Image 1 (cartoon, rainbow, N blue to C red):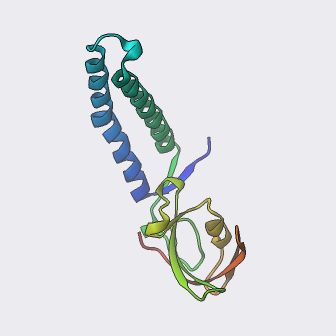
Image 2 (image 1 turned 180 degrees about the horizontal axis):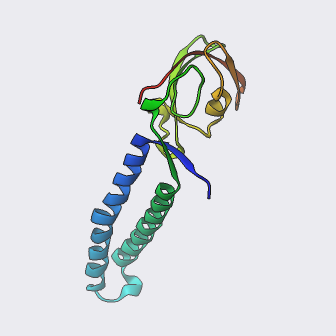
Image 3 (image 1 turned 45 degrees about the horizontal axis):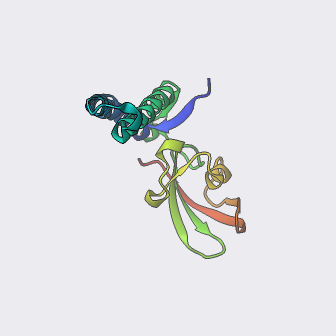
Length: 158
């Protein structure tokens, strides 16, 4: 069973989504199915079929979240330190082509949000930065060709 790395914040977010699905979404869809059944012929009842489809999605997502939380390897980045890029690190890089700086935090797949500066540990740029230190250059095979990023700083804030 493969462990799934995630930050404490990532675990909390998945746990909150699971609770919402079980306590709010699941009962709501059950009520919608019950109401749609009261309208008669189920074979031509679009509301019933939509509610059943939604129920299937909710149950699938609940199973997925329970699996991920069971396999979670929660990493508390507030207890981490050092100059080497690892999971949870916030890394400032300099694009050697454009001279633009960017800051990314390396997080679990479910936490990734590029607009918020959070990139997945499995992304090509994150994989290229792992085990590098300040001053090292990470090379990434991007769709537009090879990109080089100099690591400017490594910090450990959530």
